Image (cartoon, rainbow over all chains, first blue to last red; front, side, top):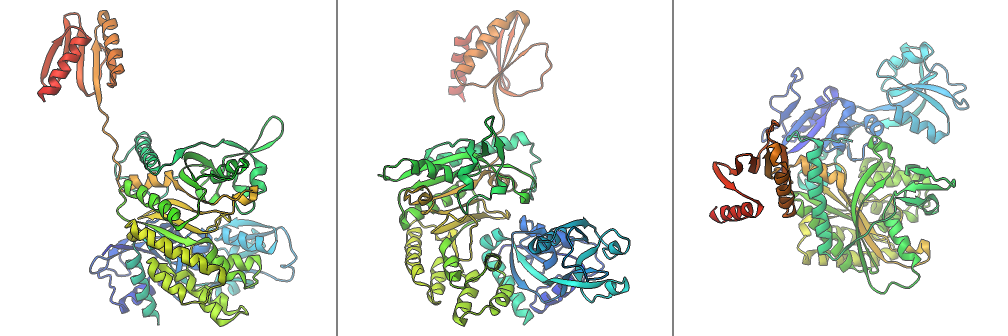
Length: 208
Length: 414
């Protein structure tokens, strides 16, 4: 059996995924949430688990540093990674949306300024609609941008909308449903076909 | 660009280049053993040649230059197209099949590759014949190349350019929808594919068929069974027959372990018409080689030229080979190092010339230079006489003929 490498981000997604794996008897013994370790193995060393930053998961998988990745659809779309996207894990559900202070003129406006952590995704969306936009790339607290005049709108993932509401913003347009996906490196799928398909089947079964 | 590479040798760029040369010479030798002749195409080509061809190289990806008369040229963005064009300009029908290979740089500007604008392709084109035997031989050649480079784990994925196209052609989708559907199929995104199909006003049996395309993947005989179970449009039946014949020949070549069928494979180069394929090696995300059958490309130049070809990405292969330590760089051995006193300079340099003519690698230094180099033999030309040193042996000699005789002796002795 060849070892397969699995990349995911620490946090809620990892927690849910590890719970899911436990139900099909894949256990990472020395893993606990407080651990600072970045690499874990399962009991029979057939799976190597890497913890990387969430936005980097698609990159690790695309370049072949990991065979399989657990990543949010938002990060997959943003990275434009050329990978197989084989399962929807049905967790971490939210929406990639455009939000702002008021929505009245949104549709007709040209040359609007949009702040986002997802410049590629935002650009593609507006290009498809034929709206010219200036994108301001931010790394966090995107909601602040329209409040202080840095941008007209924001493009971000919205789960409950609480942060938006508390800052006087509301969703204007829903762009894309986001959830956690299982992605696979194309070369690994060809060269480690049996191991990877077996792993996917197990997770698929665990979800049902 | 430096994609993911674990550089355990800490090798410098120059050493990588030596490995690259070994790699290229292996590819060249293999192409030749299958009867291919090396050719070259022009670096500068007219922009119009590509602008007028549909579904080939993206116009924005090409690197354009303007010559003194104001004509727009592009730097060679592709090799297959100029070869086909060259063949098509010869109006005589193709009498016999032609086998060409090339090792050339192609120039494209892809945003996905961190601004890297050139990469080396080593590829072949087989013109003049369209049979499963030819297809199989070309795939065998691809397998052979990867075996030559000692990859332990590699796969050639074989798909069909017409398969998905034909199956979704009667869905009357808009261009945007078709792109979306193709991207779901290509990324094996079953969840979203299913949701997308659910909204389409088409027969359930078609939905069922399309839903299976991404997972039509694996051993060819099993996949073919899967395909036979779904309703397929008439034109595909002949193609399916050809796939079965191809599989038979691949079995005869005994490479069935190295190939898989992947009918969800879609190539963005529109000129492919029959089988398409790509090669993957372990731990490298991108395909190391890509190709397929393109019988219709010649038609764009008013000539029917059945053809198949592929190109290996030399830079991607090089990274994989280095990462996996498959080709080790040759240890640099200098045959002779010559040290000479000033008054013996002429004699020393004449000897160096004579030795180099005999294909020895020779370095010369003046005796007062401080040199820390190892050679197989060291020669000293001093006022007191000439000496050959090798390990612990020290042998005096008078001239080059004498030296050659001593070398012969030492060779016989060892």
